[in-house]
View 1 (cartoon, chains in turn orange, red):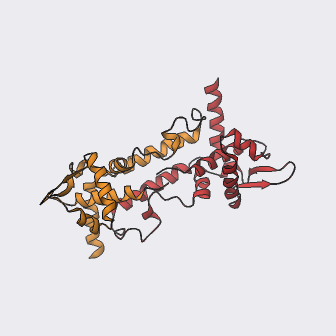
View 2 (spheres, chains in turn orange, purple; view 1 turned 180 degrees about the vertical axis):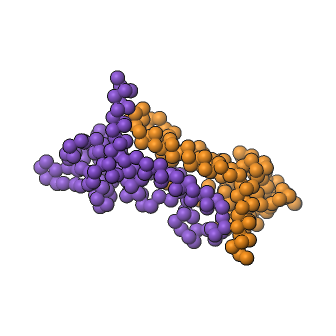
View 3 (tube, chains in turn red, green; view 1 turned 135 degrees about the horizontal axis):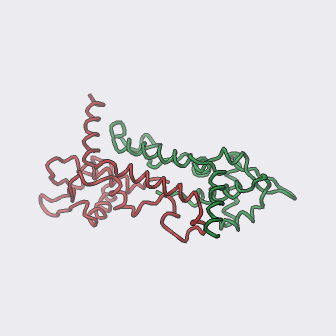
Length: 143
Length: 143
């Protein structure tokens, strides 16, 4: 029960883009090296993020990638769901035929509660705020 | 980010055993058919649960499997960790070398919070209570 590398890298890349105050574009190769993400893997992830509008990709001279929406309106949860699909901690939360006891199973209820809480936490901060807080903490740590 | 089938089946089997009020043993084949768990798969899971003491397995005539401890002292979290290892929602929570930004990354902090909450919820009820509540709900649903 773990976030995939795709999800992890997608969040890293998006937070990196959120750190650009003036909304300028980044080269994919720069995002790759700055965030320790293999470039080929990153290109696939960017393609997924572009299809949901979270990233805008521009070709040609001066092109690159940037956020498709203000960083203040994007949460880690939205990024994870863009690359991994709807989050479900247990199969019984998305597949009604998975377990025939679902109508009375109280463990199912516990999973519902756990999932709601997890989603709530992963949607509690925007990537703008996370990028800002990380930058401040980094300055303190490296001082 | 989903519980494995091993974890799901382990919980199902343990709750079934918890439903035996007098602590008598069950045949593995009966646990398998009653909980829609392939028997070969179940035998592997029982072997894991036995090695941690959560299940006692007795061979011979009149033998079978039963809980290794009172159901009141066992939670879904303990069962998941017995078959899947220590729960970690993201690799950065168990592998310190996974990400070089960990000292200041605020998403890491968000994952810590999410994981603590998830563990808290999955340890909030014993399988004795979950078995009892499910049984009561089943009676109402099927009435």
